[in-house]
Amino acid sequence: MPYTTSGPLTDANASYYTAGWATTSDLSVAMTDLIQNQGTTGAEDEVYMDINSFEFTGPITGTQCAHSWTYPEGTSTFMYVAVPDTSVFTQDLTSAQEGLQYNCNGSVYYAADRKQFTYNGASYWLYLVSLEEPSASQTYGIVGDPANIS
Image (cartoon, rainbow, N blue to C red; front, side, top):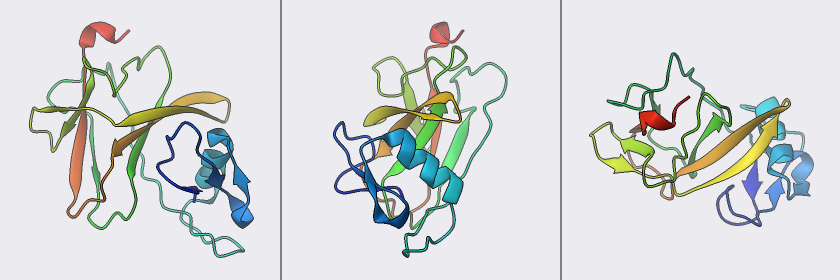
């Protein structure tokens, strides 16, 4: 959980399953349900995926894949990354000037889509990193235009 009735979580008109297989069109409700229940099975056999996290430190320069993360082999869903929507992280990972590095190889890769949500009063962007299930572990890092980082 959350799962959509069809398509990625970032779809503009997505409907999400939450606890007890209820549905909502509010990504904030769905993400709160996921974060609070991650790694568990609900009363109605809803399986909540695990969430991995990492901390961004110092100024985010976006160079040389300094801030990277890895999706494990066998991830059986779309891959996402959520980032705070703050003045410290102003990059849009779907844009032409900013994006991701796939396997930290220096080539710019762009997130396929993004959608905003709120958790605990803070605003975040949920980025759809890949439209395909990984057949092997995949590492991504942030690339960006340092001029856009405040």
